[in-house]
Amino acid sequence: MNVVRRMGPKGSEIWVSMLDAAEDILCEEGYGGLTSRNVADRIGVKQRLVYYYFRTMDELIVETFRRLAIREKERLAKALASAQPLREVWNVYIETNDTRLVSEFMALANRIDDLRVEVKLFIEESRKLQIAALEQARSAGKAEEALPAIATAFFATSAALAMHREAALGIEGGHDEVRAAIDEFISTIEPGS
Image (cartoon, rainbow, N blue to C red; front, side):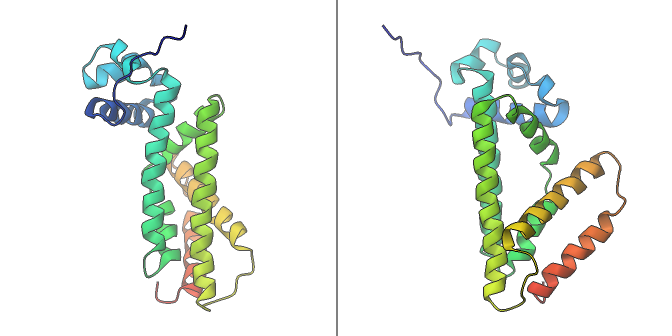
């Protein structure tokens, strides 16, 4: 006989506050500090309440990432709908505050299968939006690319992530030159951006 476990409502105020707490802990302490006790302490509830809303800590982590992914995809979709989509998509990546959070999720994805699936899905979907921005600029006849759109999107995203990670460590050598090169490339494709 299977017993159906009663769970707290997804999307409720306390559910969301647990996601907020998990996100804050990941940013401040890293995944080593993300425990049910720390989440409960952050929001002032008993530890067992975390398991009323989430079956496992892995489930809480996956839901926290899903929320981040939704937020980022909304930013990318808004950028794609702008007058200068290529410039705005680049700005989403270069002007993010979520670098530490993304790094923590990438590390966790190595051990949480469901998170790995979500991260993979997010990367694939966001890359499609980047490619759409590049192809939109190309179809407007503004410039031809030397690289395929997918390669350009991959290199630009990788550059933005690397610069954020290095800047967090105090490394800035070459960053201005990389930004200038990408800005020049975008200006060639989207004049006036």
